[in-house]
Structure formats: C-alpha cells, structure tokens
Length: 267
Image (cartoon, rainbow, N blue to C red; front, side, top):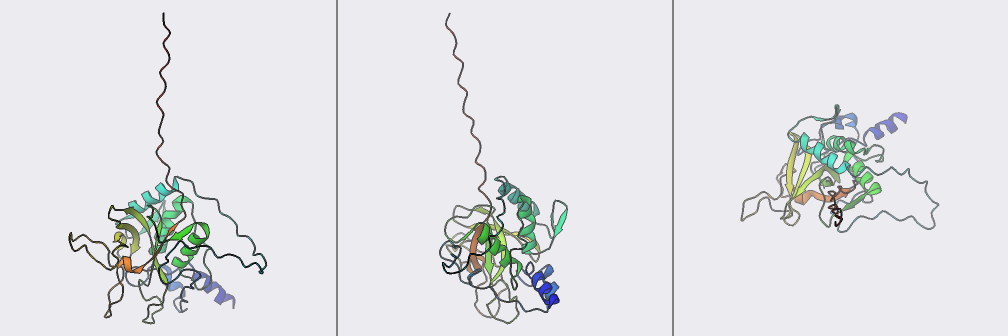
C-alpha cells in the first residue's frame, strides 16, 4: 500500500506533450495508467469565461485553510521572460546551474523558479505535471480564455498526444508553455519545450484551424500534434485550453518629473 502511494505521488510532476511521446520523467511510473483530468481541475473543452474557484457549500464544514504563498516580486515577470528567451534553441533546460527535466513542465518549472514560484505539491493523485501546474495557477492566480495574455503568462493545451495510449482523445491537459509576445494581428508567440528542444510556436485563436494566412502565407498556428489518419485537431489554436497568470504585471517605466528651476532673485 505504501509503495502504491509513493508511486502515485511520483506521477504528479511527470508527463508532458512534446509533439510525440512525453519527454523526461514519464518512465518513473510507466506501468501505471494515467487517469484523465477531472472536469473540476480543467475542462477538456476550452473555457468560455475566466475560471472561478469553486465556492464552499454552506452546509459543509469549513476546510482547513491552505498556506498562502507570498506573491512574487514585480520584477519576476521580466526575469521569467529573459530566462525563457535565453533557452530558445537549447535542448537542455539548465537554469542558474540547475538542470531541469527535458520536457514542457521542466521548462516551465525552471524559468518560473527565477521568480521564486514552485509548482511542487499542487497536484493530486492521478495528475500529470501539466495538470499540477494548472491547479497551482487556478489556486494562486487565474486561468482565462478571453482577453489578451501578457508576456510571461502560461498557455495550456490538451490532447497533444495519446498519453494513456488508448487511441482516443481523452487525455485532458498534456502540454504547457509560456507567452513570449502578442503580435498586432492577435497571433501569440509561445515558448515551450518540445522533442527537439526549446522553441517558439505561433497560435492565433481568431483562426484556430488555419495553418497559414491564405493572403500572406504567414504561419498562424504551428502543428502541435503529429497528424494521424483521421482529421483530428493538431494545430496550436485547435488544442488550446486556457491561459494562466500567477505573476504580477511588469513594472511601468519610472517617469521623473522635471525639476523646477530655482527662482533668481532680482537685484
């Protein structure tokens, strides 16, 4: 029994999509079947509004209060972005001398550690690493689908590969990255870890099923899942679930007021 509990705990921070088989620590408990994400944790269909935290039932006894973690400093968003951009093109996720798992969750954990954010201990039995990060974001920040994300925000995707190997699209959350920038046409540039390393992908939620703009030929949505025989969603915009924000906004540039010239005494 104790062994089962230990292995279930190890499942929490493993599993990730990487346009193919998961990378990193997914072999720790490979013999255990992955339980799909529960709707309360993250819907398999995209959300339509900002996800609200479930209200406690009036009849239920009050649950023990969770320990509130202090918010990261305002400068942390810039630190996260700078670290993520430096890793683009790398196969290894190495941050400040520490090597993180070479998968999407290891990448997000590594860059967010620069802001003092730790996602450990956020999941429950049956969660994969992406789901655990989603739970942390929901509990300590917000998840949303409407509005413009900010650079440094998280991006969650679903069904990017067949995690439980049953041939069906029932795996829930399987991939996470972070927003690098948002173009004027609404195309979001995402930095994430895939099989070939840390890369940038594009995603346009206004045209989620279009690979390229028919007029300009510009890429709108990159391919996030290897296409199969059936016409199932494979593009970033099609597999998008939600954004997530746990970092404070970047500090605005400080504007210094001009000093008043000293009055000159008349003679």
